[in-house]
Length: 580
Ligand code: FAD
Image 1 (cartoon, rainbow, N blue to C red):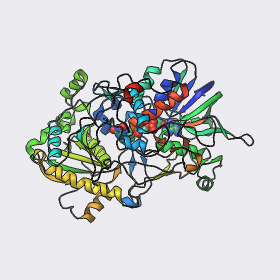
Image 2 (image 1 turned 30 degrees about the vertical axis):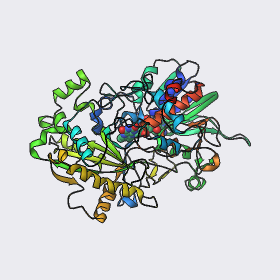
Image 3 (image 1 turned 180 degrees about the horizontal axis):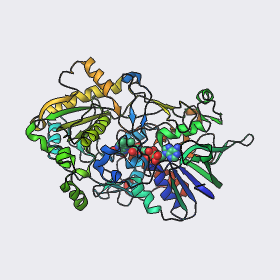
Image 4 (image 1 turned 120 degrees about the vertical axis):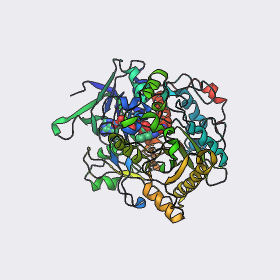
């Protein structure tokens, strides 16, 4: 077997949360920790250079290449769902935007210990921010956060156009002393222009510790559970495989007495693994001939994401060279040496960005609520109305040595969606992808769709303002002919893609009777001993903003609970901040 001995903690998945836990739980040397990761090692070049994000979508080895089930509300399409498959997980393949959401996002969880005032000290403690220490930012955490280091002249023009369209400037979207609304820079999880994923920031510094074992290429297929008499079933280890199929290739990793399994395989794989192990909705388990070890109706339910669409406009020919693509690529599609030198020597330039690190949050509904719309401005033209497909097509163009047409894009995301989906199973085969029903636009009032329709109209209005209009020749997406409500709705349904923020499928809650899967007090799975879930899947309601920061906050809290470290020492500084 690739592992020997028994472990105090077996961490399933060396992704974002898994790397945080692996670091913290091994720090004092007292516990033996094993990390089992399906994918490969961290640190691949594509993950280091932020602009290489385009190459990570549909990547043959660094991504899971997962698609949703056919979505009836989206014209019977399967939606591609990017997920990192390597140490660092999705933090190594994401767009690096650092956003926490708002105080109201956490107060709405309505869970003791998880209100805005409770979570803020953990966000602050977790980061080292280029803004320096303040009531809302930290300077001593492992997570690296900095202001975006690539500047394109169109960023200022976007800000001026947004202002002309009626929006206000926001100097820090994570400043909880002010509303989230407005336009501005998104900070990023980068360090000097390089991606700072959880492998780099948390796992790598801990790799040399003798009490930490990290094994890649190990796909966990099932939890080892023991049911003895009338007591609760108890996790005793996990089963895993290093290959695709053969029975001979099944191994087990065992827990030492008092040990625990920590599930960190993410919002898609956690419910799949729980169900394969007999923990899940009874009916669904029986349908697939799986044993029912612990009935748990909430497993896989409550799936949330930020459904997205986009607006894009093509450049006038005389401005063709202003866009991110022409700054990166020269004749024949080769990367400009100047761009490489800028990244290496200064940590700046067009390679130091994932492209979408400026934008706005807008309340399109009026009233005083938090924004329902997020705009991500890209100084580049989307080749496809599905933003992710656009990156994929872009990769193809490059291979063919063709130029990318100049232009701008505004990615439009439902920041606080009301729709809910579900992760289920097609089969009991642990290598088969699970059945992911995204449930986009399933909310009864139609609010999520309405947000994106309002978003397209707002994006049009921003693009029509003089500062941007002077560069633009014509609208590409949805296209000037798409004007009626019906046509706009059809466009959104046919273009909707994932905002890459899957959360909630193992929701934490206050009691086993409230439909939750794990306890919000200690992350333990209701009804099972020695088993906890710690990652994005426990987030009960999606925050308005990308989900990586909240995932690290959750993992830091779990680590402190397990090590007995308690609340952040910096709580004092943060206590002065307005959070509730
Ligand atoms: P992950 O980090 O995905 O980790 C799960 C790990 O488990 C992976 O390494 C996986 O390979 C492994 N695994 C899965 N199944 C098994 C198994 N059976 N056995 C062993 N290992 C297994 N967030 C932001 O904050 N800002 C952004 O700009 C942003 N953009 C995003 C863009 C994309 C394309 C994606 C995919 C995500 C983005 N996110 C962003 C979201 C953010 O990255 C995630 O919310 C966060 O990384 C989730 O962390 P996690 O620990 O729950 O899961």
